[in-house]
Image (tube, rainbow, N blue to C red; front, side, top):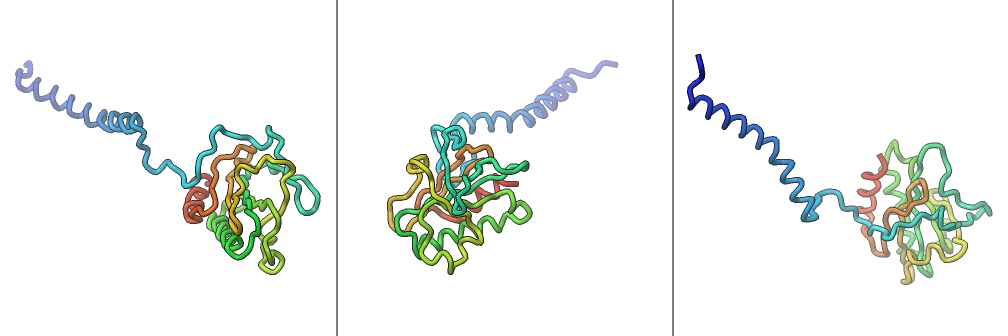
Length: 189
């Protein structure tokens, strides 16, 4: 017994409907991608373009103990958050550094995958405020990081650097530390 024509049409329509139900999200995603709308993928830092790699550029930071800062240091990948102070890092700058260190603490079990590097003249009262408990302090050799350093007094900017030395994002002076924390939690997992 052969199915009736109306039964065949109903079956074909159901099959087409199922096909379009599965195809609709793909079409919508392609459309949103085409117009540049990508929810939840934008970070709070500014992308660094053209991309820079501090290892290949030979950017060197001399730590307080005289050693060179190793951009690639461990067998397990570790990212580096580089803080660059403007002239006269004092109370406001120190407050921002404290918020950045607190953002690291929120990484919980991944806390060891982020290193904190402060580049510049140490903040006023750095010894009394415990800055050395969280940050490695150093000075850049040359001008490799000058484009990221803020010009304003008592300000700080930050650069997030991948474990291979590639600079991922720049957080200019006045950035939102909460946005930095969110970015760190996305990148370090």
